Image (tube, rainbow, N blue to C red):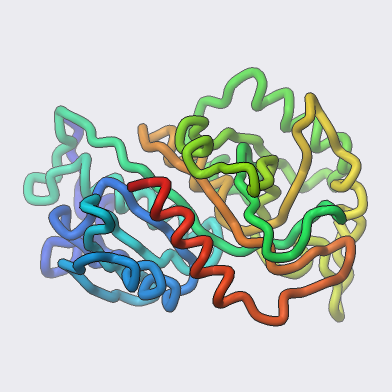
Length: 289
């Protein structure tokens, strides 16, 4: 089996993956990913019992049980660059022997579910709605660094959306699907399923303009009108494209559900969403348990 030298698979002095600071026994196979460190404890507050707590840098991990099911909650920090670290190191924990540095002969598939916040791109969707990502349109570049196979449909949709939004030439997007079964499991009649645009930043990469102009300032206006076989562009966030592409390529099941805290077309922003975030967390826990 393949061997991974120390320069490729970095470990700490406790023989744990370098950034997450975790060992295999400390994580479950169902993992809820959140950007905000404080959101981890919001999740574990619902647990019946907690067996593990740790923090290294921005990566907080709580593992416990909810209704008899073992679940981990891990904070990733913000952005697809952090998702690159998180997905690769979680995969290493379950599919590489960290003592011998050799790939395991039997692979483990994880359920990786992102619970996040987002900006809504459709004027009819109210703030505090649940947006479920059926696909992600990536304006980041993480997937381009890997040998990842996209389907014919994904390649077609990438070109279709790229042309519709008239993206500047330097931006080369990609389009990738979430795990269909896991996405279906998270969705009920109150959710809004559709395409998520994943950006590499919060301001210019999402068309916002403060003191610097954005080259895609009109993207939210154009996004409102895209419709391909009833697939619409619903929201902006910063992690899902890397999660879906890397996770699937490594054999994991990945999904995202976000709380919409801003409606970009209506210029409305939530005045506070702690109650709604707790309700979303409960929604997810009940459906994965």
